[in-house]
Length: 201
Image: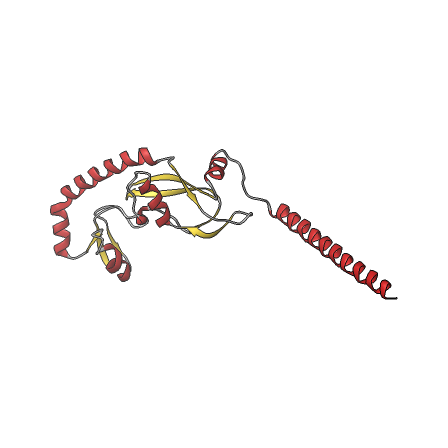
């Protein structure tokens, strides 16, 4: 299907461009969101008549978005999550979580504006783009940590996770300690049994 773009769409084109897109993408996203019109002769004429107004409105929205981006760039949000010693989250951080955290911090952001290609599944700092306008992006830092104290340490650049080798060493130590305890208990029990047998004789 051919459509006329009513705003800049990444990887498609600028406002006013006539582009060919998949029917499903047009019907499910571009047309309902009023980001494009079907490229019919009537719509082409309508677009040309409204072009000046659309461009003025776009400029106004872009200016507002740039003002918000100047506040948002470099902004950091802390998300407290449970995680393993290696730093693997039990669950993940989604675009909805980030949008909610930013909104709580006083920045009005919707889930659809957070550009997260895949959920965050590990502890640490992650730079996440936020699309405030088709032509304006801001970047926020998401600090996923197990506690506020840990978040502060991560913000200073410290690594709060135990390396795999260290964890294996700890597990090995625990295993040998458990073995030693079990042997000690067994010896104590056997010693008592032997003593009682000797008394019987």
